[in-house]
Image 1: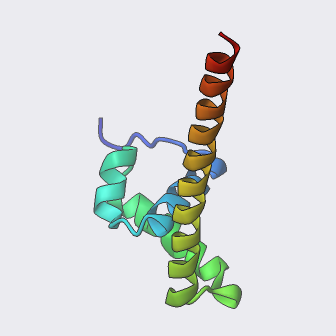
Image 2: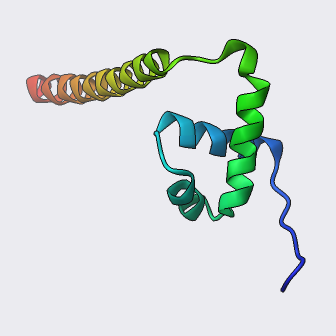
Length: 95
């Protein structure tokens, strides 16, 4: 089926670019996972970088954001665990 093109929404393109940049994935690996061509994903990333050229985050800032997001995920999991434990002990205390 040569010549057929698949249309992707702007939201999908933005999420794909964010996925590659936030998870520090290679374009090839991310393209396989997302079912998108490598050159297509690469052009989306290039366009996003050019668009953000005025306010580009440095490597340190991206690393800090990545670290903070990981810490946030950990804290959210802990809160959920504590909620479940509190509910368990509350029902156990009632019986």
